[in-house]
Every structure is written in C-alpha cells, then in structure tokens.
Image 1 (spheres, rainbow over the protein chains, first blue to last red):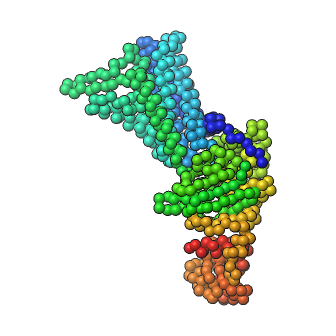
Image 2 (image 1 turned 45 degrees about the vertical axis):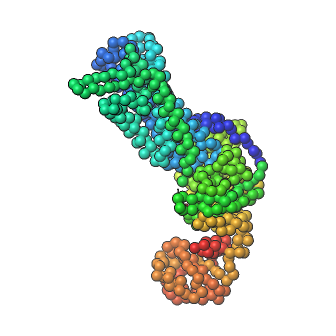
Image 3 (image 1 turned 45 degrees about the horizontal axis):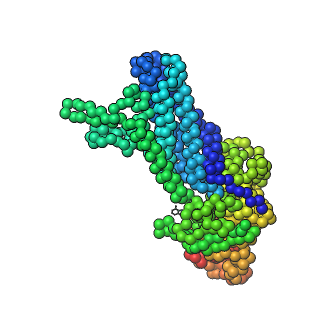
Length: 275
Length: 314
Ligand SMILES: Nc1ncnc2c1ncn2[C@@H]1O[C@H](COP(=O)(O)OP(=O)(O)OP(=O)(O)O)[C@@H](O)[C@H]1O
Ligand SMILES: [Mg+2]
C-alpha cells in the first residue's frame, strides 16, 4: 500500500489556483471580460481622439485623472464580479465542490486558491487596461510617467483586493450564484454610491464606512493639488458637505474591508454544508 | 496504518428532523461493506459525515482512527470518496481534472501521468481523455468521477451509489473494479440500491432506515436471520398496468401477507406457507383473469431479508 504524503496547504492552494485559472482561460469567461476591458479602452480612445476634451488634453496628470480616475474602479468591480461573483456559491450550486471537497484538503485552501485565481485573472485585465491608458497618454504627451499615476495604480490593485474580498464573502454567504452576483452588483454599482450621496447631503458625517468612499483615493491622488478633506457647497440656505478621502484613510478603509470580509467569508465557507 | 471507518454516536439532525440517529459502527480490515437502505434512509448523510461535507450534530466520524471533522487532511490522506454525482469543471478534460486531484492528494509527479492513464483505462475513458468534460454524458462523467477515486490508490474507499447513470456494461465494470480493489486489500464502503450488485461484490452489509442502523453483519448471516421461514416473495408480472383495486384484491387472497408495486406492470407479493401456498396463489391469480403473464419467486435472498427488515421498522 503506497502511503503518499499529502502536500502542504500552501502547495494545495496553488494547485487550486492553477486549475481555476485554467478553467477561466478555457471557458469563455476570461475572453469576455478581456473584451469588455478592451472595448471600454477603445471607446475612450475614440472619444478622446475625436472630441479632444480639454480635461484630457491640458496635462499628462489631468489626462490620467480624467481617464484612469473615472474608469479604473468600474474595471475593478466588473472583473471582480466576473471572476469572483459565483466562485464559492458555484461550488455548491453546480456541485463542483463535491469533486474536490471530499479530498484531504482544507476548505481554506480551496477558498484562498480560488481567490488568488480571481485576483490574477482580474489583475491581467487591469494590466491590459493600464497599457491602453499609458499608450494613449504617450500619444498626447510623449514618454512620461507621473508618480501619482503609479500610486493610483497601486491603489487600484488594493481596491481590487478589497472588492474581491467582498465578492467572495457574498459568494460564500449565498448558495445561489445569481443572488450572490446580484447582491454584489447592486451594492457596488448603486447602493454604496446612493448611501454616500445621502450621507453627504443630510447627515454631514464622513462616509468612512463605505468601500466606495475608500476607493476615492484612486482618483484623488491624480488631482493636483490633492482635494480638500471637507468642502462645503452652499445652495442658498442649504449647505452640502462633501468629503474627499485622504490617502491614509482610504488605504485603511480598503484594507479593513478586505480583512473583515476575508475572515467572514472563510468562516462561512468552513461552516457551510454540502447538501 | 489502521484501515478503518468508525462512527461513534454519530448523529445528524436538521432542525427537529433526525437524518442519522446515534450511529455506532466500526468497519475495518480488507473487505467490501454494502450500505443498504430505502430512499432517504440516511446513507448519503452518513458518507458526507465521513468526508466532512457536513458536520455531525453529535458524535464523531473517524477514518483511520482520526476524527474527520477536526483533522480532515490527515484523516482522508489515504481515503477517497465519491459522494452522489459530483460535477467537474466543464471546460477541463479528464486528464486535467484528474491531475488536479492527483496534485491535491500528493501523487508523486513522476507517477502522475501513468496513474491517470491507468485509472482512465480502468473506467474505459482513455479515448476521451483530452475532450472537455462539459460535453460528456452523465455516465461518462460518472466514469471520470470513479477514476478520480482510483487515482491516488487509496486504502479506504467510500462510494455512494457508484453505478448511478452507468449502462449495464459500466455497472459490471465497476463491480470488477471493486473486486480488484478487494483483492488488493482495500476497505470499501459502498451504498447501493442494487441488491444483486451488493450480493456480488460485498462481504458484509450495513442496513439503515430512518437514520437508524438496523443490522451490520455478513451477508449470509443477514439472510439467515431475516428471511424468516415460510415466507416467500413472488414477483408477478402483468400484461397491463395494475391498478390499486386489483392490488387490494390480491392482498385479500389467502396466505398473502403483503404486496408492493415494483413498477406499473410488476408486483411483489409476499406469502406465507409452503410450496402448496404458492401453487394456490398462482391458481387464484390466473382465475382472476387480470392479465398475469409471469410468476416467479424473487431470486435474491438478500432482497427478501432486506424487505423484511425494512418492513419491521415501519
Ligand atoms: N439539508 C437538509 N435539510 C433537511 N433534511 C435533509 C437535508 N439533507 C438531507 N435531509 C434528509 O435526510 C434524510 C436522509 O437523506 P440521505 O440523502 O442521507 O438519504 P439516502 O439514504 O442517501 O437516500 P437515497 O437512497 O435516496 O440516496 C432524508 O430524509 C433527507 O430528506
Ligand atoms: Mg443518497
């Protein structure tokens, strides 16, 4: 009887990542998301090239601010949903979990392996989008790389980590993939920004509890000088206080979102039953 | 290494419903144990508890003496299971899907290629090895699932209705696989509804109903104990569908102890008495002119014991 040693949990995690990525590349999922990224980039290229809006063409940093500052967050959210939306719920709903979970592998290895695969796939999409952004900038302003753009890119990656944490949490919370995906879409694309606007308008407190508020650093860092932390706009008797997240705050918000949702998602997956 | 599967006060409840009730069972050695019981008896529940797919409400599930829930990686290191019908990522090929399992289970990389070929050829899927699983039929997928159990050459194997969806030849191939595993001194625990399959490959059976273990013994002992003397089971075939009024009438005939429908045109009739009683029943059925076209004693002795045992718990 051959007794083979089961690999370490870290090695198993990478195995899961490898085959998950293979599955993304084989199925149409990766190609479709790549297509969406490329189409968004191409549309921006055409619009800027044709209309030459002044916000894009005055300086290199303004270009990045108008281009990357407005679109990067959407690329992050879309690819997180694409690669993470049903990552865990699908294992239950499609019964693919029955193939792996009965093996000598910790559930956390499966969770982390799949998370890592979603991160790598999303990261590749973002890199393609960065390339399109930088090439456009090069066309208008020649070779240059404002350090703020490098920072903004790093914040985007942090945002990706954070949003994927949240997406995986929801896909671990619900057994139905469509509910998991719908929840993430509604929260990330509508609910959070709605709450942020309401808080700004009526509550006069900083919406520090919102992941989308934390993501403000991606665009803010590209605004020179960095926006004021609080700005009060008056409309007659009504004053609206709007907040611009600072870099330390933003980093903290995104990091805490990731840590909390990752722990909760893992605990949920550990406890969830296959039935 | 101890080759054993053991349940200690193992209980699983869903709210107030008890799917598995205080199971105490120890299986060890090199043999095949059949796991029998009607639909909803708790077979899959038991096997899921042994692979940590669900958590026990009480008690422990031990594989090789190690608690599966608290130490799954070690407990399952030399145990492989096939529970219900898993799905494989549809865009992977059998070779890739098996590579994943082989890698997770630590099959040495230099052996992997050969092991994959061997297990795919055992389930007769070699010619499909590089095609995407997503397009496979149900039975083809199940064959790959069986190969995934063989890939790591485990010493303990748990199978939950492994022949589900397989064609007759596939079923007999799986029986051969199980027999060859037995020859190589493996411990096999296999749930099944096919009593001929169990009679053919298993040495012992565990019977369960309503979440309770009814018996665990060798097949011959089970048959001795539970097919009571004087009780016969006859399978009666009809040329047309039998309706409930006919079944009720048959139930009233002398010596008939009970009836159960096998399908639309076949009825299982249990009678008491000797060969004379059987002759009498055939005569009465024929004279009822209800389309009886076949009349044969149930072939499987295990089946009658099974039916007796299940009936007793109702
Ligand atoms: N998640 C659940 N919630 C409530 N009851 C459940 C759940 N899962 C299983 N059960 C119940 O537990 C009982 C045992 O189910 P199980 O799947 O173990 O039966 P089984 O013996 O495998 O039956 P079959 O031969 O049909 O496969 C059934 O009555 C089933 O309804
Ligand atoms: Mg079952």
